[in-house]
Length: 210
Image (cartoon, rainbow, N blue to C red; front, side):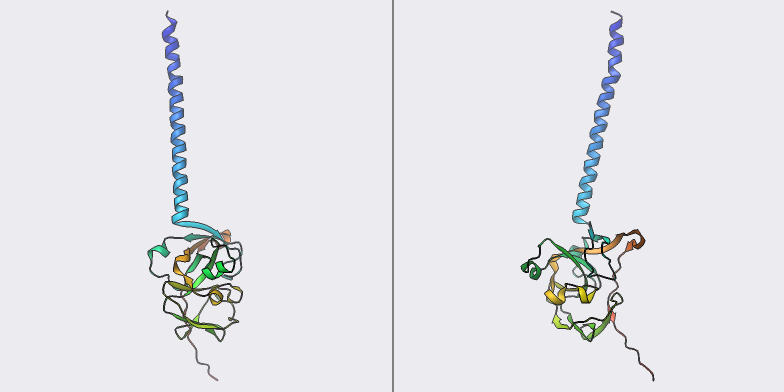
């Protein structure tokens, strides 16, 4: 008779321990699922990792660079600044040519609605002014325009102008096709840092003295 209380008392910590373990396990999984949901929401709505598959943005972005694309700005701002590097879905002209409509491309914003854009004499012209483009490493080898960018559209060109499938071939980009703007290169580590958007400035001609 005297052993019963000891047996009963001995089982209580075991039962309590199991309940505590199950509660901790459920809390751990609950926290993990919450963080996973937040990460997916962040990726879907705010930031998305991408990699560079081609050389159309050389020398600014190299092959296999890993970048983060910020997705809020295109939806919150009425216009994207000149010089912004945007990631976007394939435009209608490329989809009609056989491109996957979910494919993503990356180029630089050169023209906004109402701008008159042209390429001549090896350089870019906007609204009658030649533009200085520090990211471009060589003269442009084609002529283009002039064209006026329509409403709700952008004109986008690759920094590697002579090897880029961009607006000079398929026309203005519908604004709704923009996914986001490239804001950070996170790989390779030796080029880790923000991706800045210097706007193309009117080219200043200097007088040559003989």
